[in-house]
Image (cartoon, rainbow, N blue to C red; front, side):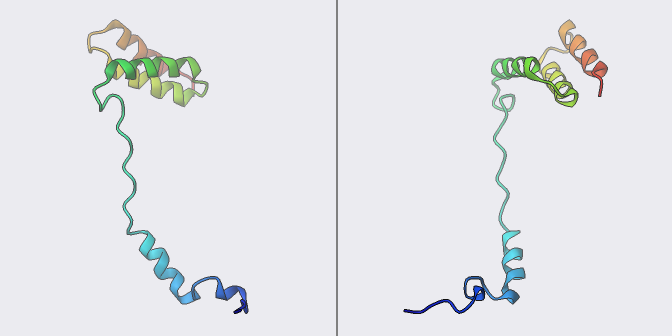
Length: 92
């Protein structure tokens, strides 16, 4: 039976560690999942944003949700204008 002489037997030699770290940087980052808007599921996206507005506590989160919801609505929509104005008025 062969025993471990030291902790160095468990890890690669120290001179190899930078090479290993460099190799790790060559991996591709995972691609983000497509959003509901990108999947053309506008109604589902609108529902999700409206639900998020009910839950949003932090001002920056609320502002983002208001803005994203406004982008889903028609340009001439009165609600769109209202949402954008509300987003501008949210206290940071």
